Image 1 (cartoon, rainbow, N blue to C red):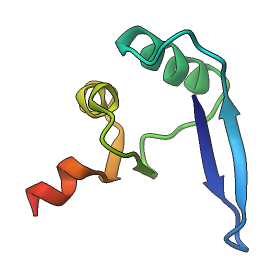
Image 2 (image 1 turned 45 degrees about the vertical axis):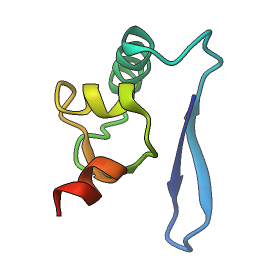
Image 3 (image 1 turned 90 degrees about the vertical axis):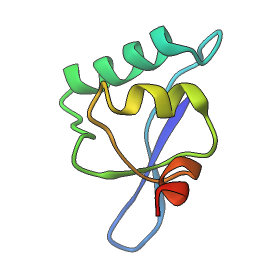
Image 4 (image 1 turned 30 degrees about the horizontal axis):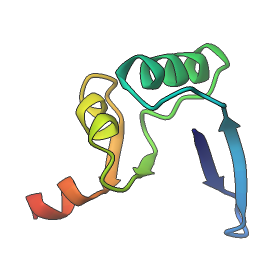
Length: 76
């Protein structure tokens, strides 16, 4: 699992990554909770994700700003 950002020159930069046994609700909560504990606030930045059902299902619970996903495209 990884989180990649963009710097001022539009170059990708790795914010965080973790080797996890699976990508399920518990792992996503763990990942974003550790980001928060480390001082990385991702609640106000747009997050890109594909069709990851688990990520989309917890986005509301974690107040993540998922803008560019299959679900947000369908809502338009």
